[in-house]
Length: 310
Ligand SMILES: Nc1ncnc2c1ncn2[C@@H]1O[C@H](COP(=O)(O)OP(=O)(O)OP(=O)(O)O)[C@@H](O)[C@H]1O
Ligand SMILES: [Mg+2]
Image 1: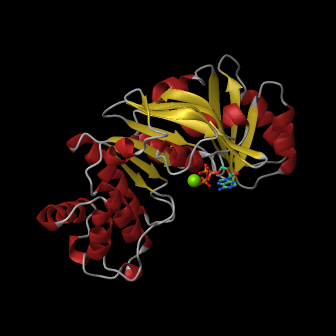
Image 2: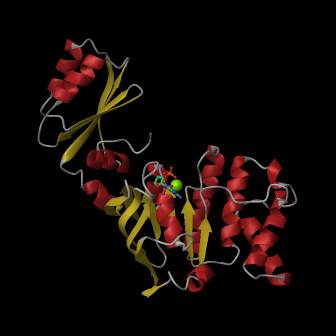
Image 3: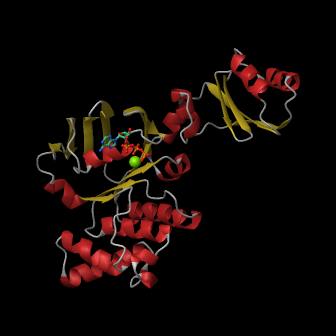
């Protein structure tokens, strides 16, 4: 088991990570979800022993690895948020370079490179320079680098940011496959809740340096079991309608995204009559109204009053 205990990081005046407790049990895919600036990358950098914590501990099978990181580094692969590749080398040359850092060489390295290229789907492009790669291909190679030494644990920091949907799906499927076939334990960081919902057995949601909630998807969604999430689509968002929703005592929360308005209400109350009345009074045209099953995004909204994405 890999574990963070009361991890804290203070950058000058700013506490980026504040008492984070988190663990990865063998064979799990665990999600770390949070908005920009939540402290995800800082947490990951500490867990992977790239930066020292201000306080707290990182433990592998109950032994601290802060002073002796070698033991962890041997079994851990890290996919950094920023792409870390040599643009003027080919995919294969990058893998050769990083493989040597892991002290792989000769036919063992050759075989690992072939295997990794297969996993990340770059066999056909292995001799092309990375500078000619698409964003998605770079992301895939970035993952490949972390797989070279066959780690037991892999930590991925937002591996799908800024890429096309096809590459994104490929990466998500690859993560599932690595977990299933190679029994890799994964910590997957994202601010896309759909990804985390799709991939993860257990989830931590982080905000402003704290873990604000953790558990299985169902456990987390159950936080909202006493609430209904109602989604209204409108022709045009009308400020006076939004104000009236905010002022309504039956409504706990209101969020507006494009032409969609979401409200949270206690399950036992019927707010529909009010919604239609307020819409009429403020001359708002509703194009649809429906009760939604809560998502992780809704839970985040409920706990913080903000949307997960900016
Ligand atoms: N080296 C540093 N020095 C000072 N402040 C830092 C440093 N690294 C991160 N921070 C600050 O710590 C906070 C958390 O940053 P972090 O990168 O961990 O967030 P994140 O959750 O990974 O965000 P994102 O989703 O944007 O990647 C931010 O306010 C950031 O500005
Ligand atoms: Mg980050």
